Image (tube, rainbow, N blue to C red; front, side, top):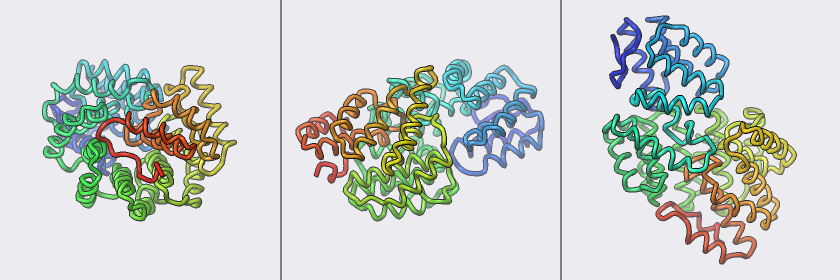
Length: 429
C-alpha cells in the first residue's frame, strides 16, 4: 500500500496515484504551483482515491472556489477510507463549510492521534490558519504551544520547522525561532513557507538588511505564480521602506503585491497593498489617491461582505483612506451583529480598529488615540503577524505626535517589544 511522505498509509492500490498525491501535497505545502494537476493525475489513476479528492477540495477552498470545494469533499467522503482518512476528510469538510471553531477542535483531536498528518495540520499551522484567524486573545502563544506539543513527532522535518520556528519567534522566543527556521531552510530551501518565516525572523530580530539580502537572493529561485511571491515582495518593500527607499517599495507594489494581474491568493493582495500604502504615508510619503481608489474598488468587488478579521481591517484601511465612511460603517454594523450572535471571533476589536483608522484620517486624533490605546492590549485579536499588527502601534505613535503628545509617543516606544524593526523615522517627526 502506498504511503504519504510521513509514512501514513493511503487507501489506493495504485502506486501512480500515490506518487501523484505525494507530489501534489508537497507542492501545496511548499506553496509552489502545480498541485491541482497532481491531484487530478492521482484521481485519474484511481477515481476512488479519497485523499486525492480531499486534497483537491483543500486547494479549491484556498483558491476561493467554495462550491467546487464542497463538491470535491463530498466525493472524498463517499470513497473508501480508513479511520484516519475519514477524520482527515471531516476536518476539511468543516473548514470548507466555514465552521472554523468546529474545524479547529477536529484538527486538535485528529493531530492527537495522527500528529504527522501534515495536510490536516497545515490548516492550523500558520498565522492564516484556524488558530491565527480565530480572533481569540492569546492566540499567538496558543499557536506556539500547539506546535511545541507536536514537535517531537516531526523531529527535524523541514516542513514542520518552517511553521514552528515562525510561531515561536512571533511568541517572543527569537533565538529559538531563528535556529528552527535556519534548520528548516537548510533541509529544503525550495519552500515558500520557510522563506516567509525567515523574512519574519529578520523582522523580529531587527535585521532589515539581512531580510533584504535574503529575499533578493531567494525570489529569483521561485516563480511569480507561487502563492508566496507577492507576500515576500511585500516584506521586501517594507524593509526598503524602513531604509527610506520608498521608490523601490512602490516599484514592487506595481509589479507584484499590488499588481492588477496579481496571481496569488486575493486576500493577500488586500492585506499587503493596503498595509503598504498606509505605512508609506506614516513614513512621510505623499498619498497615492489612484492606488487607494483602485484598492477600495478591488475590495468592494472581491470582498463585498465581511468575514475574515485580518481581511476586514485591511478593507477598512482602504475605505478610511478614500473617505468611504458610509460603506465602512455598514460593514462594521454587520460585523457587530455577527459578534453579538457569537459568529465573529474577533468581537469588537475590528470595529474599534476600523473606527480608529477612520478618525486618524479625518484628523480626529483624540478619538483615534482613545480607540487605539484601548485596542493595544487586545491587538493580536485583529489577526495577522506581528509585522502586520505593528500598523496599529505605528498609527498610534503618529497620532500622538500629531496631537502634540510626544511624551506618550516616547513611552509607547519604550514599551515596544525588544529587537523588532521599529517605526519609520518620519512617524516621530
